Length: 171
Image (cartoon, rainbow, N blue to C red; front, side, top):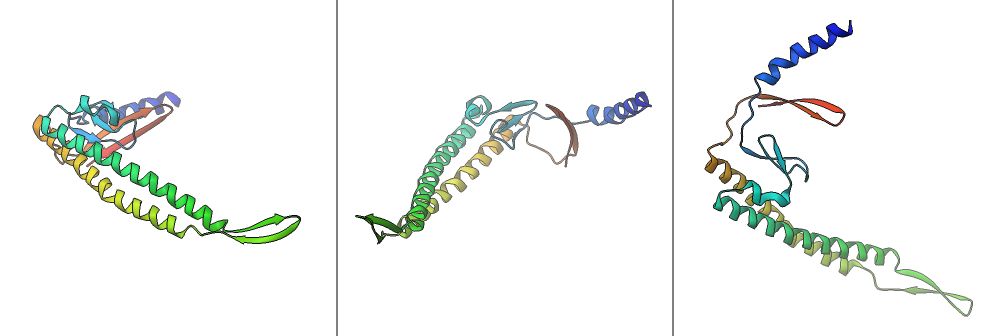
């Protein structure tokens, strides 16, 4: 029974594997470890100089990298200001003891810091959008230069990683 099941499974998967189309076009992955996928190779974001051979595409990628860094800096600074402002706002009423007598002391709130943080994040958003656009331009330019621009053809792919198996159908 088990032999029949395994042989049936292999016979049904074989046509999918043998007719799957694998192109050398460059695509985006879904994680930072597999950021660029070129054929069977998977590259990290930091390895973009290995992936891009076209100078125009490399220029777009450098712009995307710079804009992404600026966006992350503004986002981190803005998040820090928002967090610090929220803590100040929550803890603005404080009880202080002077010689055993409880005195309620009011401190300045953190709404100003929250506003500065939101402003910093607002500045970072256009940089993030620009980084995404430049990244997509770089991939499109590299694929055009290599002559491997993706066509809209359906394909199957068997993904085996760790202790999981998946079948990907791309259309």
